[in-house]
Image (cartoon, rainbow, N blue to C red; front, top):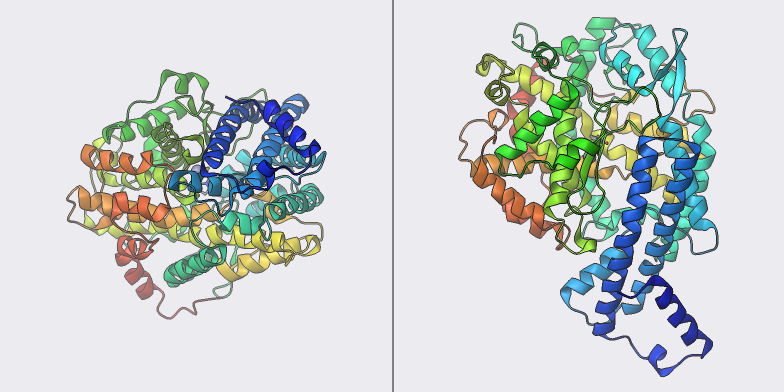
Length: 600
Ligand code: X8Z
Ligand code: ZN
């Protein structure tokens, strides 16, 4: 393996000698292949180091670990950006299909490439480490005590006092104004890097990673949103009426947008926590997963073991011993960590881990399956070459675990694992579907708008002065939400959502909320399921699991439509599976909304 140093030295000699025949001649296919192989080896090495530095910082946030992470990340970014630029040398060279795909993926490898000038990669990395750490260590005063995001989420989940909800919702948003200037500097640097690689801006770079033209991808997300928007509007209308019943006109009017702090979640992205407020009259749900988990004595580790058991039932090998020794499963008392849940593979082989501040509730029961999905995917494609060790697209990566959670949320499954004594009959279909829709359908517009906002920021359409106002324009347009009161002039509300300071693209979750239903529909078909989709659980279906694994093993080695086809037979992202799953509920919502003035 050639070292980085040697490659750089050789290049320097060539330049000093002036343009030679070797330089002006078109590079060969063999040279392209060698270049890619070298790049992969170098990137793998840099990753091994950067991943550990990032893990340590995320598990122990201090000045020093931030310094270490930023340094490793800057080096990795510099290296990968340089390879991405060099990859352009081989444009138009007739290379084999694998090399061609690798050259393409090399240009798309970084979320935020650094500008190619001294100090820029360091500055970018320092900003990102600082933004993420500011978010993760954020605290504010509530009832005379300093509280964390975790504490605040507990209040939003369970309090039904609008004054308290407003205080906590606003309180958390006092953590982000200090991020605004740094975010603007970061966006400028990232754009400069993206432009140097030939992209219009960072948003265009992000949109280019879907095996289609970036504009076509944006149009694709519009098409999908149009498919599901009517359903979201029905849910919005129904939920708004129930909130109005609960709180009265002064708190939640029966028309217009919904107050964002009343929906049980800090970002109003999933609404399942307010099921008690919106439950249908007359048909009660015979169980509450939150209560079952507590009653049956679940603790965070048991939640994760239960998740593992689901995947084992599909034929996946158990998690390695190191997973249990190295994962972070609960929030430590004595140090600062990044609590936002994530899944890692530290050595690109078997050193898979999760990091989450797990609580014993229904939301985290689902999140455990989500995170494990990432780990099983990482392990499935570990034998692919470095540049193919990724999801077919990032939406696939987010959808694997959610797909598992769809089965693991069914009463049938909860009964099979002993959590639920009696499987309810069809009369509980609507309560069940409503619970699911509060999480899955409510999420869709949020899943779309976070990057709509960032695309505008990166393109320059939204300036730093307009950051907050434009955020709320999108919140209103897509979600039909408004803040509980006018926002202060210095507010930077996008910064109060992890993925903005964490610089994680978000459209992946929108896509995942569609793919997971496509996977579920195909899996249930393969398992021979004949009933309604929402009652199907594929727990224990080993043959189906094997076919699912065949899709997962492919990683990013081929365009995602081909990979989708391996498991589902379909080649398009298609929200008809969402419609199939929720069909009875949509019909029911339309009936319930009779006489309401829907929309906002
Ligand atoms: O960030 C996540 C996962 C980690 S990839 C916990 N999710 C999004 C969010 O929390 O905003 C899962 C659903 C959407
Ligand atoms: Zn995820």
